[in-house]
Length: 159
Image (tube, rainbow, N blue to C red; front, side, top):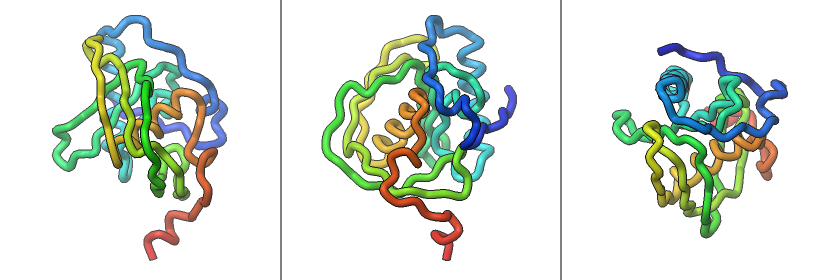
């Protein structure tokens, strides 16, 4: 497995729509693992989409757990239903130094394939709903700064 370079805002690849994965094979599993390791190596990373490492495939990884025991490695994720609203202060590994207030669904229902090609459904709320929405946006070339109502320097947050 390998750590990958994270693309940053200004890289035109981050603005492109990713392609669906046709076959979930060992190469896809290796890519998902590389994404996971890259995300964990980054400061405060809880989610990563394939375009962020320069790969235009509909793949995301998420880990909100302290122990790394609730990892999501999703292929072709789609939000099929959402409900409610919440405002969350978001950051992004591809937009270093900035945070923004973004309105996201309070709950989302996501359908995807897991890393073995098995269809799965996830009902998520609160922070997991935010992260799923954020990462799925990346697959369509959308960054949180496109949706933020206010943007802050992350150093202001530390004071």
